[in-house]
Image 1 (tube, one colour):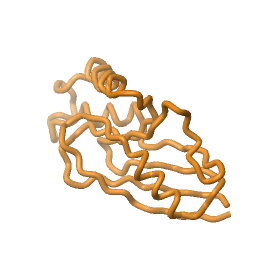
Image 2: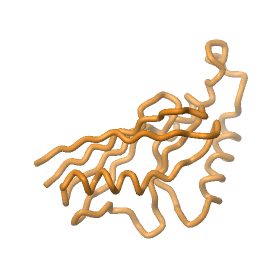
Image 3: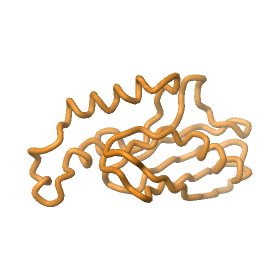
Image 4: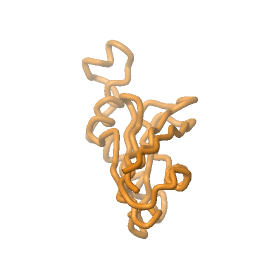
Length: 137
């Protein structure tokens, strides 16, 4: 068994958005040299998340943001008294900080319509970090 780890960096431009990071994760997997195993994609930060979602067009990603805004609106939360971003913490906790993807013969085991998205809930940020860990052989 082998383990390779790398960190991706991403600049976000809006408060809430999904950013497709599939190409960057694929490059990290290729650089690892590992052909079969598991790929963990982890968002560092308490106001961000990782999601696997449809990649056909932006409508699903926009719908995700719209749904989360309806479920967890901005303002009125106890934590807002500290720094005004309680909704971002709640959204990231609901979606979750990571995803695990099978690695099959050197390729991510995603279906035709799946991509990996970094979910920003408290942007814009100059530097967001995503840890990619590849394990296998």
